[in-house]
Length: 119
Image 1 (cartoon, rainbow, N blue to C red):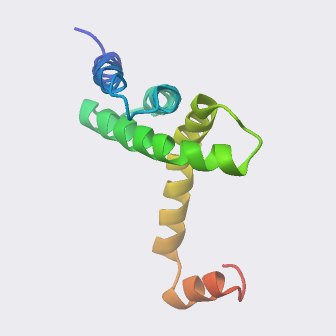
Image 2: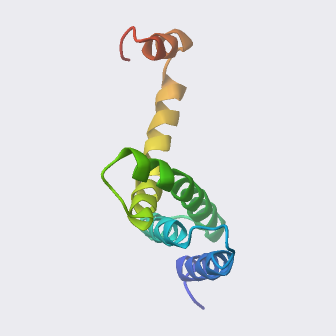
């Protein structure tokens, strides 16, 4: 029986490859996002198949959506590279942000966004 990571990665790659045939989908950005998501799914340990699939889909979506923003605001010109970077680092940044929000008081969060200091 194959390992859950292999099955999840294969199923996600096949379905996203089928979607990339559509004319309004940026295939380069989708490829980069899937590669970054696959790295994250294989890097994380002790996850069930459903958690790996959810991680891959979330990371792929974030990477695909941020690819055009990264290419327009940075020196990176390749959609695939931008999506790979975004999908690889996005989940780690989101987890840190959620942990910070959980441990902070509302007044600290308000001060931070208003420019009054860090917490």
